[in-house]
Image 1 (cartoon, rainbow, N blue to C red):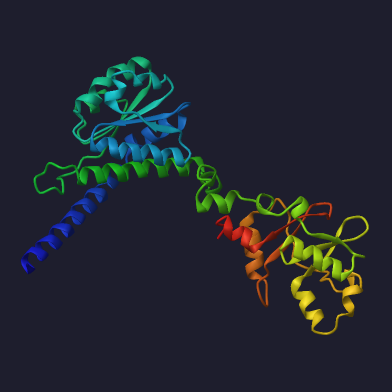
Image 2: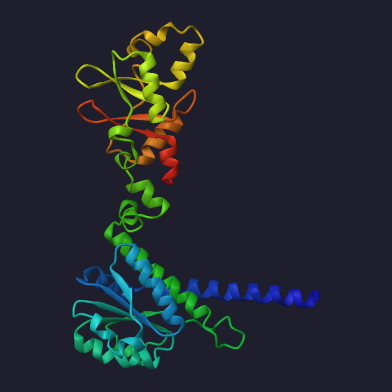
Length: 328
């Protein structure tokens, strides 16, 4: 049993060593040919079409997805389906990245001449420059490996890892050349945490209209309390005769006043409001609102009045609104 356990661990470590070395050797292939291929993609006026068969196809799907999400319009085209009609998706202005470790995959080789006839240029990602794919391509990127991690030398292992890594190298080089920023990335990932943090504004999450608790400065504290209770946000913006924001009344202010006496309930809310609360503009990022709330001292706040450029309280944002939207 112990020998079997030792063998399992040894083979696992050997696999990782082989694949790590295969990836490390790729640095030697970042040459003029690699740069020329990347520049061709930068100059491409249409899309990048990635194709490959079998395991190379699976890796190709990931490369296409990475390119598309990092600023390079791209999609995957199955070479067998391409041979039966899907080549119609390829246009003259496209760049085709064809992946085959051997460079001899029939399904890939069979569509090369037609791609050339269409007018699209081909980047070969393969391990043999003199293969059919290598010779037919306009650009060549070497992804060859010395040996597969598979003990039989059959299952694509080191070669697929190297291909995936080289695909990432292409994508990252393109990102750098395009000065692709995190805001750009978020635009293509609106459903993710990063997208919510970078795209969601205060205006998207604030309570407005009838849900926005606003009281006049001459409203009694008792009536202001009724408004706060009705809206359920624990606070209300206070405005002057012109509708401009002049302060905030909260349930905390009400509780502290109740501890003294009840007479304040019939006084104007302006007499008990907080005149200089934290506020935020509607066009600010929701993440910025959360930061303001959390950084307040001596303790965080749970509500922020939203004030526009004219000084009008157009909404109010509550901490739970931000957390519900996944803003972190």
